[in-house]
Amino acid sequence: MARLVVLGGGVSGHTAATFAKKWLGNSHEVVVVTPNAKWNWIPSNIWVGVGQMSKEDVTFDLAPVYAGAGIIYHQAKAIAIHPEGNEENGRAYVVIESTESNKLGAIENIEYDYLINATGPKLNFAATPGLGDANGLGEFTVSVCTADHAVHASHELAKCIEKMKQGERQKFLIGTGHGMCTCQGAAFEYIFNIEHEINKAGVRDMADIKWISNESFLGDFGVGGLHMKAMGFAVSSKIFAESLFAERNVDWIIGAHVNKVEKGKVHYELLDGSYGEEDFDFSMLIPPFAGAGLKAYNKVGEDITATVFAPNGFMKVDANYAAGAYENWKASDWPSTYQNPTYKNMFACGIAFAPPHPISKPMSSPNGTPINPTPPRTGMPSGIMGKAVARSICALITKGPNAELHKASMANMGAACVASAGKGLLTGTAAAMTIYPVVPDFEKYPGTGRDTEYTFGEIGLAGHWIKHILHHLFIWKAKLKLGWTMIPE
Image 1 (spheres, one colour):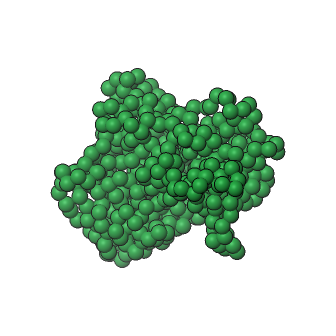
Image 2: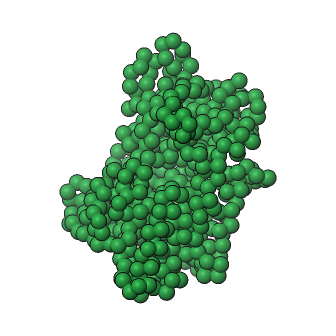
Image 3: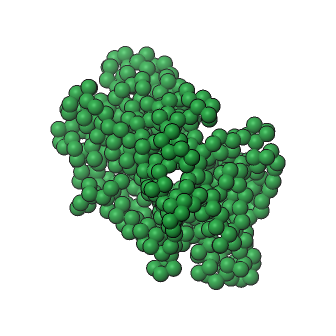
């Protein structure tokens, strides 16, 4: 009997574990280690953050779902990997620390035959002074990265709306809280949901709303922007985004590295090397991501973390990490199997794998400060990766070490995104977009790097209803309810 251990129960890890268990059946063990007792459909946190959904609407308990599927579940965080075992026992194992209240901090070793690192990111609030504490509940700003963060954000937003109703003008600042952030899309959704809610409350004229981002242009989104078919024309995401901001009277600051947050004020550096300050009454700034902080040790206890993980803490996989300068970058640099090059029984997927380089063009200020989005690996790509890695491991277990691995390169992968701009039965709006491939391939698609026949977008009420339906579909899928395998990633 082989044992697969999955570290992380988010979109990628949950997808990998549930499909692996379905395909392997009771002949082999699937174990999930995740510090969270609840699963969170993160794309809907923005609706929690404006009071349009509750925490209970976007989360559910993992334990009964895993118990029903026959998956062994540990509510714990992984702290170290021993891919060679130790001198007494040559079997690989992972060290975990319990996060359950009744055995908080208890340490346990779990042996494995195969390991999937799907730990997701560490929300690195500490990278920007004043941005937030380790839990993300900062004194000065809010967050929508977790369901609890979003609940806190909704309470603070409600206070601001009440102040505006009492005649007190409010300034809103939404975006990224560091020069190396990703997830501009989440902030993009949140700023327009705030604008929508303030409109509904009848106090839009009492609000100043501003966007601040590390993107070099609006609509970069960490993928270098895109050209998409809209109304029969190829329209750049820059024009699309600028139009959306202008129509809703939302101002912007771009190419910005937020380097400090104080009460009611952010300090930032721009790509041209200048510095500035921006006041606010309410601010939601996405933190930068880092690896979960896992350590790795060889058989004699020597630290091999630098062998297994990149400096940012994400696990090395089958990517080209020696591509060098931007001019040398190719779509083929990106990983396809997500197998660790040193230890072939370890894989990483979702945010947990180390990308070879950004997708957006790297930029720095004259002061040497890097200011550019890091690559997004969330949502649909995370699910696709998780499923592909699960297929590979199942093949290795059932067919032997020479089994062919499944591939899911972001350079050959399409993705769909539905970005909400406000929730409402008849007043909701969302931008529904597809992109193919996620990582541009300028050799195959000269000029744009993408196939414009499969890269398109529209905005309107229909997009909102698509996002609302997807919310329910993916929670149904994650709960492993009837027909869950038929719902695509």
